[in-house]
Length: 165
Image 1: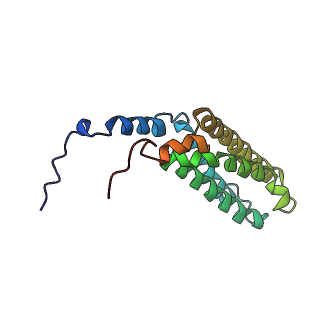
Image 2: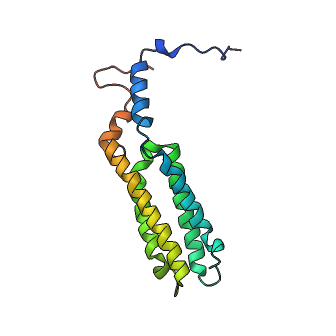
Image 3: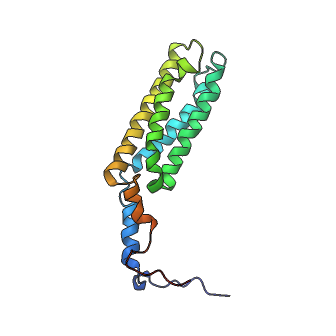
């Protein structure tokens, strides 16, 4: 059996400088790391809000709607945390979800009361705000654009030959 407990020093690796640059480019610019948790919490609250505010009986259509939208917001937050370089392009989708949450009581619900309207407007406004923060950070650092991702997708420079496999 091979001894896998001994690991060599990576500083002798021929591509160490390129690997460090790529790592710094992908994860070094995590400007909005503190936004991931609030986005997840907004999604969690959105999914649970029909039971927290007890509007399940008066607005049954909004129960399923808020549950699905909350799960979608939570999944976006998990994606931002797990793979930020690829997911911050979807921060505009989070803004669209926020706008939909603002208008959904009148579109999905039937005669919503002030509590339901206020709940969804606050969830939507916070979602739009955090989506804009994520979109601004992605635009500022070049993530979420095709030019910013082209360098991370190709591990070899154009002049360097690929190794034989």
